[in-house]
Length: 95
Length: 477
Image 1 (cartoon, rainbow over the protein chains, first blue to last red):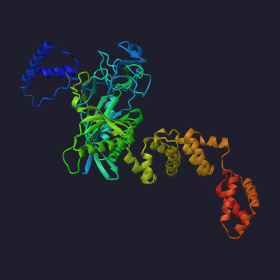
Image 2 (image 1 turned 60 degrees about the vertical axis):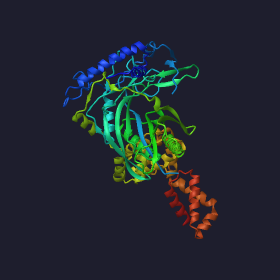
Image 3 (image 1 turned 90 degrees about the vertical axis):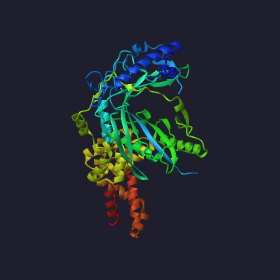
């Protein structure tokens, strides 16, 4: 399957990545190889096989609805490049 | 002008009433100082893993069953990717491919009659944080207290045709969820939020028109106004030969108008994929039956039961069951005093009057059922008359006072002391010779005046039956 440089540009923009022209070519090639491999896999007959939703045969792992509120705001805010009044400060968002 | 039809579908986000968040143990309490209901999981710290709150699944199933959906017995979560600081992980854990409930519907009733609004699906997801735009500095402050609070999103089919139908649908939905205990549905706290998808088409057309989506709807009144405004705007565009643009609009209730937020041009591509950090959910027959067997009596059934069991008019039953809080109060009071008609009367007349006067909602009532029950007993046993009872009830309503203590303290108890009544009446008769003459001359109304004067002398605390009897006795002597 042919991946155009426009597609690479679009996917990179969605992921907020900037890629150089040289990188675009390399990534396009890599993605094409991956999709070609998928094509091979698609030839397998999967009639009657349940789609897999997880690698491990485990399900229904829950926690009970119990509150353990630790309030470690100071600790959490340490990771923020900028903070103000107990909040994470980020560049202005306008909707 | 051509005749147009409005087509509306709703996406309703409901915050679930769990104590802890959907994927971590932080509290879901509303408000709180910024970022004090947070932990490494809900603030998206690298290396943390979500663990699903079982109660979320049970609430979602309960909602699905009550909304006549089929339950997806094997379901899972997906990642919805987007960059916005209200979600620190840069993705929201939601459900796209296998939502927990599908293909339901509820019946609504409007002036146009009954109809069914179909429900396309219900899915579980996490709420996002709150952004506050700093007024002093050129930055946005992020509070993640709400981030990770469990939500269900109830997606309807485009089956509604008017604001009236939308409000009827939302009201029904709210009552069902409140009765289930799945959510408090407080719109002012954002526990129930509706996005409105609206399009117009010529009457008789089969194809749907281009729709717009309106977000930020936080009251039924605003919703009704927004629908009216958007319907007019779209019809005007079409009448002038223009096209409706598919876009998200924000309704500004103060300006009574909506404006474009983002068009579908820069539509988000969410690149959904199965959430690898969570395991699949398998809902067994036993689990489903346990949840089904716990479903409480819902509004429609309760309303019918009140009519049948307590002999209450259907209008009154609909008002009382129109709020779960009011219905609970009614049942608790009836359980104590066993006088359903009296309880219903106090709720329908005085309570409604005071709610209106105080501009309160039924949800805000906070007097205890035993105080109302006591008051009803006191009236029944002639300890106080109805006029005093109303006054005492107002105190119960406003301050939740104990009626017995209050009546004792303020000396409001009914005077049934024969001697005191007699001497008062004798004085009234002596003071009003004209009325006595009128009465003897055949004007029976004059007696009413004397009774009234006596009640006034007694400051309304006399037993009217006794007063009547004594006045008549003395006049006829």
